[in-house]
Length: 202
Image 1: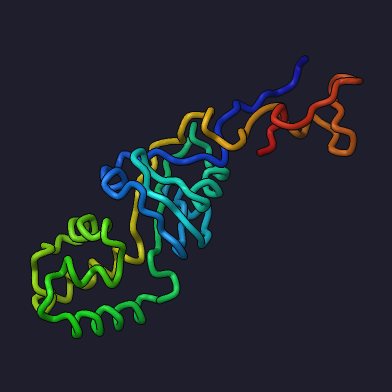
Image 2 (image 1 turned 90 degrees about the vertical axis):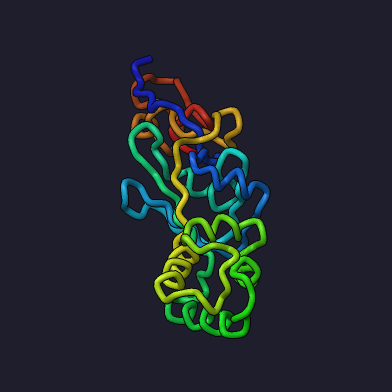
């Protein structure tokens, strides 16, 4: 009927990641973390809450909310997770020093249990380049810095959304500027009305 149709795409959906670490940690729910979604390197969305690692990538309330801001046809995305949002870098470094001081004779893999969930420990060890069997007393300053960076900025690349059939809602549809918001009647065709998923509103 002459209307502009914005290409429909999934919204409020889980996200696919090529990162094999997600599959290794599938089922792990993170609580009270901050997720920042970067679009081509620029922040697009930031919120604190819960996220979930799955066999395909990321899910959970934070991820669903973030997905509503994404245009999968055009841009590249990465999820940056702050695992310790209540602590700034200085306070987190002080906690690392304190924890490491108390656990000087333990293996790193054991000491990390006080900082991250058990299933995340091997991934953190890999990302920081610290052998899990290393004694805490032998960790160098630059290794501690890499650990701090990983705790404050755990990055997961995003390759796309899960199938539209799994999405809670869709974005896309009849362009809203062509519809009168007071009556929902088309501005182009008298007597034609649109509502719900037909409209580019998610």
